[in-house]
Amino acid sequence: MDQKHIRNFCIIAHIDHGKSTLADRFLDLTGAVEKRKMQEQMLDTMSIERERGITIKMQPVRMIYKSKVKSQKSKEEQAGQEDLDFELYTLNLIDTPGHVDFGYEVSRSLAAVEGAILLVDATKGVQAQTLANLEQALMQGLVVIPAVNKIDLPHARPEEAAEEISKILGISQNEILYISGKTGAGVPELLEKVVKVIPPPKGDPKGPLKALIFDSSYDSYKGVVANIRVVDGSVKAHEVVRFMMADATSEVIEVGVFRPQFESTTILETGEIGYIATGLKEINKVRVGDTVTHEQTQARTALAGYKEPQRVVFASFFPQSADGFDMLRDAFAKLRLNDASFYFEPEQSDALGRGFRCGFLGVLHLDIIRERLSREYGIVPLITAPSVSYRITTRNKEEYVIYSPSQIRDAGDVLTIAEPYAKVEILTSTEYLGQVMQLLNESRGISKETQYVTTEKVLVRYEVPLAEVVVDFYDRLKSATSGYASLTYELIGFTPNDLVRMDILVAGDMMEPFAQIVPRSEVVRRGKALVAKLKEVLPRQLFAVSIQAAVGGKIIAREDISAMRKDVTGYLYGGDYSRKKKLLEKQKKGKQKMKAMGKVDIPPDVYFKVLQRS
Image (cartoon, rainbow, N blue to C red; front, side, top):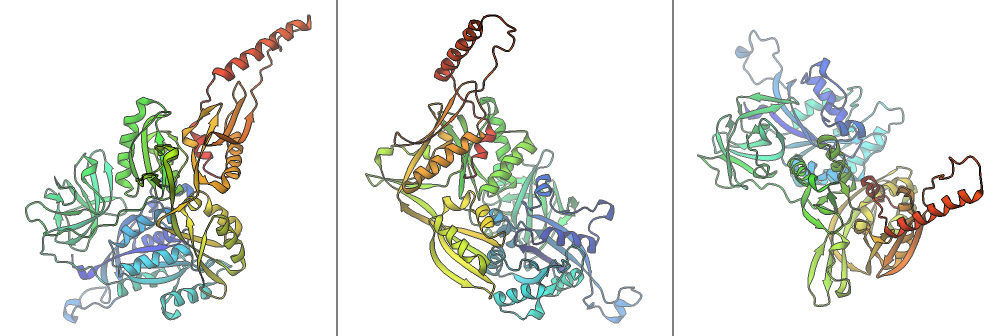
């Protein structure tokens, strides 16, 4: 295939600005999917994506587009042809997520293309994640095509949105396209601009094979399937390839492209995006960011690959029974293959047995993994409360990092606890500036900069403890601003603070999963809030249960759950009252005995309900 007729691009935008709907119109316009098979959110292949209305995984698709660009053929060559002023182009589109938790998916997509469509909602204008994704695209040196979407809505303000984009990019408003992903208005002109403006891929077709793995999945018949962008050379089925980072070899059993389902082809050439089925069953041999080359004629150097994603939330997953450990490990390995930002390693807990400590890009990411475990593998694990990492300094000046409070080796030997801080950027309307700054100050934030993007929009930059951001800060921000605010954040480092460990006791037993590291000044407030929340979600038992929060052995908050009461005298139909009294006394003694000996079994869903602060 002639590289001059290939265009690789992706769509970037804030969440819910219409990326997947625009991708649907592209598929309609190019005829990539038959009309009878077409459905909304065609590139969102997971059921959880359709239900929640968000894109979680990037999804590539190949389209053949008939462009109005004038043909370079001579008049003699054009003689007898119907379409004299059209040329066929191969368009490789990658649809990307918009939520801040899935920014790593976006960064990998950007590394596989030459251009990006920057989509902005005409009703909301530029948002925080719009700026974050734009910054990444410009750092990659991509050609950016700005477009204002949803112009068909009655309350759309396309001119205001275009003005914001022009100020940010430093371009004329005439260069910005106005489209509707829903009705298709302006979409043909947008595709024409993709062909005209985005450059064709560079690379050496005759050089040794160099292909970048930007995603992967597992197929029980084909083994590990690697999604690749061919930078140099070409690859065919039955050729032996080497994965340079993993130092592993495999015979390619199939090559193909995305339409958007897998469709096998004979060859993948320079500049193309497609997949190779490796046949490998060892999942760890195929890594995202690795370089694929031929075994016989190997490339001298590997491609740059990707930066390691920064996991900011950590939680431990335990099987409901010891027999489920191997099943949970296999499920995690397959999820890790399909989600490069997910991390896990074995962990041993005295209270919960063998499990895994897992790292996530945010609480939504954690929730998606939990949901996928249940849907795809039928596993409902027990999950500890999420936490960030902390750096512990002992009195002997020794330093170590912990991912949960239970990992503190000796509480009496701790000199300082340093917590991670994040650079937070919030884009909001000027009328909500006061509420946003109040929320940030309540979250122990440090003000850094306030910048007016337009007369009606302001960008606020703060440094905030990561623990305050990752759990429910986004929900509180939306509540404080009636939904007119957007958030993006980035980890910047550790800072020592006055922090202590808070333990939770249920029926006198310490519940390790609920332990938290909190600021000393907020121990009482958070302790009361947590035990009150536990009282709401814990099921009642046959005996009275006490819930306590403690710091260093001192109880700082308490709630009690009354025992379930059974009417043990209901079957009596008369006689002396002493018969009833005898039964009630017997019941009372039984409850006292159960309270002394009984243990509370906490259902797995209770742990996740406690994630949201009171």
